[in-house]
Every structure is written in structure tokens, then in C-alpha cells.
Length: 101
Length: 252
Image (tube, rainbow over all chains, first blue to last red; front, side):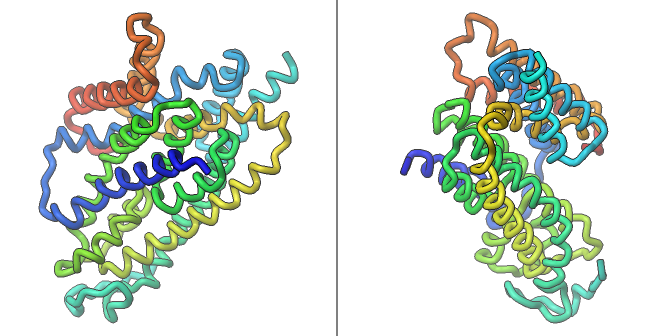
């Protein structure tokens, strides 16, 4: 059993819980500035953008197959298909590229 | 949804039922669509965590203790990328700062006089989705029982889905598992693209973040920076740019 992994989970649990709990329990009348408001709202989009690129390119062993899978996912996501289909489509794209090329 | 709105009749605090006000059961009913939406995402999480080599008990503990989709997907992808453990915790923290906003907003709606213990419990279940459901209710005041019911059904679905995903993942053939490296990224793409279509700000901020992150990763002088740090720096830079350049907006 890897205890350091469990410590990561506990750490993640703590830093996820604290921002949820503080305003409710301690700061019920807090007013954030509009700037801070927008900054907090944009964080997830910025983080996801950074997570996708360039990490995706090295996720499958070859840049070409990663791009093939990524493009399939982008196309499916563009038409707002279910998340599960977007993921399965990406995997299928990589798999097909590796089989055909 | 049935609307039972008589906030003036009950001012008592309580975690279970509040008579005339919205009950735990109303919360459960309101949470069912969220639960239905969570199960496939949680299955995906279990599958991906398994494919990324995260031990099953760690994924299951994550869903039990963290209960935040974005944090968990990001946590698993950073674990798979070999990012230092405390950098993972720091990234999770930055990612979760937005919950300050949501609970600050929910806190204005939960009945005055609710005990701190009950509030601390409701806080655990605040997610993007339960927050949306709670804040779109027409009642001016929400009973803590209602919010707890809503959160509880979403939490249960999230954990059941995780178990299903983790055990499905163990049965996948090796040839397919080799292609699963893309899965997390496909998941992020699936989350991001619809929002990029809806909002120009989101489109530019996420493209900017991808650009900054590529620079940080590829420019030779910066090779000493770990992936955990480049993600943190990129996120703060791109979100700040967005907040500066999109001053007056109401859409997401």
C-alpha cells in the first residue's frame, strides 16, 4: 500500500473542502470584487487548456496518433455529443491510426 | 419540479425535515438529473484512473473524500504524469478557488439561523452541478435539508459510478489499454469545447493557456520548471488576462 498516494488524496480533499466551507461557515457576508469574481470563474478553463496542450501530444507514444485521436474528440465535442462518446471516439481514433498506419 | 414555497412558516434549523419548507426528499428529487449525469462521468473517471495506473483504492478514496470532478480528473492526470505530490495538491487548490464563489452565493440563500455544523456538512457537497440546481430554485430561501438531499443523491451517484468504472477498467484488453492514454485529454476536450463555443472569453482564455503552456514547456531556458508549476503559472496568467480583457460579461 502506497501511503504517499493516500496523503495526496487527503491533501486534495482538504484543499477542495476548505474553499467550499469557508464562505458558508465563516464568511456569510463576503462580497468579492467583480475582477476577482471573473478571475475565479476563468480558472477552470485556463487550467484545462494548459492540461490539454501540449501534454496530449505525448500521451499515446506517437504525436500523429495523438493528433488523430484529439481531432476525433474535438469533432465529437463540437457537436456536443455525450462526454462518454467524446472519450470513446478519441480512444477509437488513436486505435484506428495505430492499426492502419 | 413541484414548487413548495412557504419560507415564512418555518424558521427552525434542522438537517432532516422542516415541515412546511423544502424537505430532504425534495432535495433528492431535484438531484436526480444531476445523479443521472454523474454516473457516466464517474464511470469514465474510474476507467481513466485505472488506465493511468492509479491504484483502485486511491481512485475510490478520491471520490469519497474529494468529490470534485475537475480536481479528480486533474489529480489523476498529474499523478500519471509523475508530478510531485505537493504540486498536485497546490494545483487542486487553485482549481478549487472558484468554489469560494459558489458557496459564497449559496450561503446567501440558506436559511438564517442554520447551525455551523449543518453548514459545514452542506459545504462538502457543493459542486458546479449541485450549485447550479440549488441556485436556480425559485424559492428565495433554501432549507439545509433540501441542499443536503440534493448533495447526497449526487454524491451517491458519483461514488457508485466510480466503483463501476474502476472494475470495468480492470477487464479491458491490453491492446485497447495502449490507446487509452488519450482518454483523459479527450475528456478535457469534451468538457471544454462546448463552453468554447458558447463564450468568446472561454475560447480565447483556453487557447491562450494552451499557448503559454507550450511556451513554458518548450522554451529551453524554462526546462527546469516541473509540469505542476508550469500548469499553475499558466492558469494564473491566462485567468488574469481573461479577467482583465473581459471586464463586463454575464455569460460563462
